Image 1 (cartoon, rainbow, N blue to C red):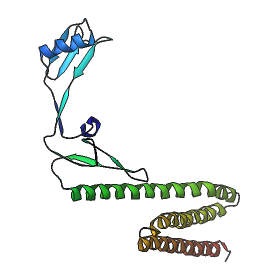
Image 2 (image 1 turned 180 degrees about the horizontal axis):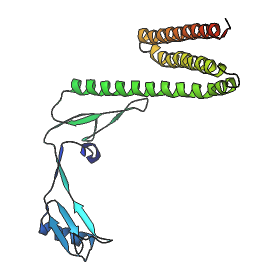
Image 3 (image 1 turned 180 degrees about the vertical axis):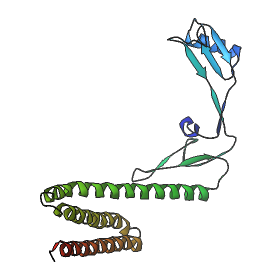
Image 4 (image 1 turned 90 degrees about the vertical axis):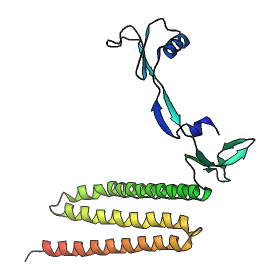
Length: 215
């Protein structure tokens, strides 16, 4: 297994410093300054209490992982990621003992969670984008008292409706091929949200117009 894939396994613990290893470190880096070993730190310099430019503090950690579980592609005795036809790399390694099914299920769950988080962030960004596009309408409406607030509410509802429609259509379309029921359900939910938002917006606008009319 490549060293980079096992580097994060196990628990980290600091390695105690000793004078013999300190001298070896000093020799390896070619320093002429004295070395002081204290607890888990090597100080290379004249005075640990008053460090100067060029002084060094060095410490080492060990990672212990007696047992690990992994899956991937075995190639000439080397276990590494398997690259699928779409370029996705498949493989995992973790400390302890786990079955292949448990590792697959955990990785699928983690990937699914991250995917939905990315989708949510995308919807929020889309909503912000539409609000920024429509913001100029509210500014124009400020010329007439009360109208600016009405315009801002209307454009906010329009931005939310567009986000619901475009976002859910995009997400639902991606799911239709693999899970048609889920894909169409997402699109239907987006359509319902858009309809509810538009209905609420029209009702609010009507109420505002009636309130603005003189008695």
